[in-house]
Image (cartoon, rainbow, N blue to C red):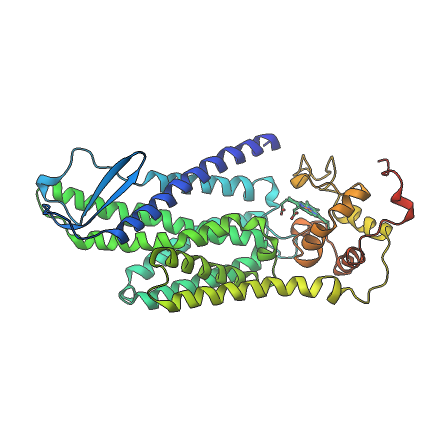
Length: 410
Ligand code: HEC
């Protein structure tokens, strides 16, 4: 497929995906918020009322009454459902996964030749683990263990961490994070499709048939809704994680991901309950946040100026430049030789000495500290080259006399 077509597909799908995701997560936040702010009815109301609340928005006043079940006579003409936000988010996400990670030779998916996994196998694993995630989650929460939610939550978290660990062995760190996010997103969408909507459909059908619906169905649907709700922050982190090489490029990236899942879920808990109840959740979230900051800070400290390169011999621009030309410029040129990139990725061109010097801090982060460049180490950069490049940058990225004049003609 021509790369311009891929780029437009990517743009269109991403646009849809983000908007649908905002709508889905927005609904999840709104309904959880409604549920936690219901108060006992202020005046007599008919039916199985769970609570009511008043809101002001859009220049008017809204009165909301929640009923656990409806009497047959109470069934309204029009009943609004919330499901297409979830389905659209998942479908567009699946297609986007294909466009970004499977097409174009899978440059983002597999990490060089080192992992020994071909593109076909990697795609199979990616799709397979999406399905497996749902089957494992649904079996766990459909089993007897679900009656002990604390234990089932711990088991779920352990499985998630194990999946993150395994996937970071096979995929690039960046793809592994996204894959875990896609697995969580699949669980969430399948919760809507296979558990929440069917339970609500059964309730509606019972009411329409003149019977009182089983409120236990509603309670079970609510449990899955709550799971989805607490997964929103972790999933959104995985979706934006590709902007943060210090997370997915960390040596212990699977641990970084696990800790950030805890941070996200705990942050949601604090949003819902303030600090009042279950202080240990707040404590766990704070500890996880401090832990993850320490983990990512450790890498920069090891590799940067003071510690790592104090005793290094002076490195000339010519030496550093030779490394960049050898390992980077196949992609980061005005006209990249790598066919996957018709334009230089992120607009980064490493051909002009002054541009190279200006970009030195980012080169340090990507090629030395986090080793997330070259992409998938496709060009086979060695550790010695990373050290040399790091030393040159730590020494102030000097250009030397030879290139301090006008930019080199190319
Ligand atoms: C196989 C192609 C490829 C090679 C080779 C490559 N890069 Fe990249 N580079 C990319 C892509 C794709 C992106 C954008 C995605 C991303 O940021 O991960 C990128 C982004 C970057 C960025 C900008 C993002 C930021 O964090 O500021 C820098 C800096 C960078 N690369 C430096 C390098 C250096 C230095 C080398 C050589 C040591 C190198 N790259 C080799 C493909 C490549």
